[in-house]
Amino acid sequence: MNAAIINDINYCKRGTVGQFVVNATIAAGPTQFSTTQLEFRYAIVTALKTLAGGANTGVVKIGPSANVSEQPIALNPGDSYALPTAPGAKFDFRDWYFAVATNADGLVVQYI
Image (cartoon, rainbow, N blue to C red; front, side, top):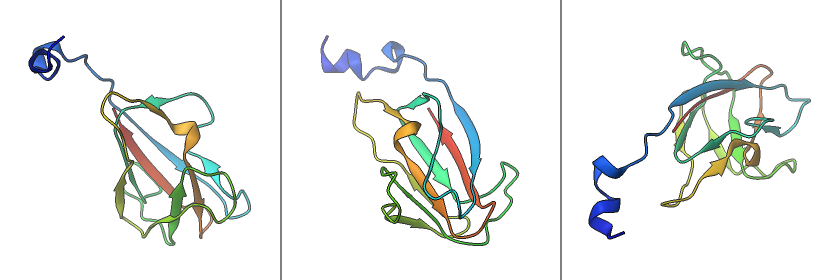
């Protein structure tokens, strides 16, 4: 298939849009975004504790590692971050982790 057709909106597969909230405690350590398979092509995470916009009170760190202190991306309350993607690839939220500095803080995750 040629590139003109692949990039034409009429030939694109419709993506499923979704959103969810994940919260954690300090004692839990790094926590998966999802414990079940949930694939995405593009995602934005926002440091909020509710879909209604409830503000976190501390920093939330994210990264693709389950090891303690290996979540290098720090999000202050209300900050957003687009998870890195590659054209034509899909990713799984089970491979991303977050750690909170304040109990019950979390992330709002929006994806396609």
